[in-house]
Image: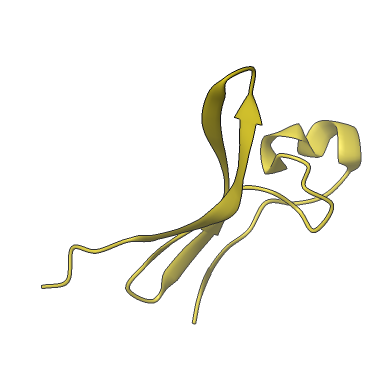
Length: 57
């Protein structure tokens, strides 16, 4: 049983701290997209009129 996950995103800084904003989380053959192609959070779909996606490879 594979318990590993893959998190994709962007690293940056906030003040003096290193930060990470995840854009997708993948486990086995499932991926949860957290951000759209423009970097906007999927939970803001009510503002961007887009649908969040969970899909399998």
